[in-house]
Length: 227
Image (cartoon, rainbow, N blue to C red):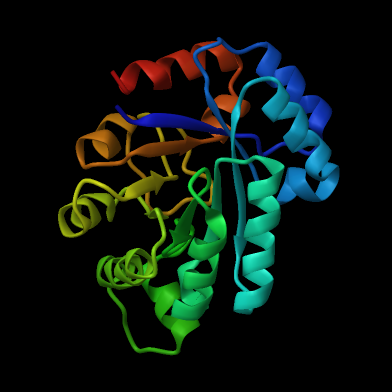
């Protein structure tokens, strides 16, 4: 069954902990990204681990292989369960991340950010046009070939990637919205049921829960969609 990861995209650790205290015990995974890690550092991660959460550290490393190897090693020693690197970092960087991870840490490669659409991504690459589905598939293959545990992709690519990569790789999918939820800066979205049906292993949800009038009820609604 797919897992739900709550994105703690909040400005302070105090707010994150206060939110978690209002949520049901069924929540297992939380995501710490650039905002909280910059504000609070590893002490917040240790606190979350101490409360029994599995921590997804989403810092999207994209650097030379040695630096990424050391960053993944530090994350493994900290005790987090999943980290992200950018697949555009290249095969050597991806292999370095995979080698540093060990058995307890899953490294997943970010393919194409869900905030991109095709015209913007083509302009970024300096191409006249690009198909995001093909680009995500190409980057995903490079990640799995390098030994990564899986990839991060939008809901619109997950079905093709699951078909092409098989049942084993993790497919971590942000951009999850219920009917009626605002998309925000996400340009490629789907409902929880659609993402699960197409093969997602983990759904990342932030604002629809964090900013809800009743976060506990919103979380329960998302969890119920997972079965």
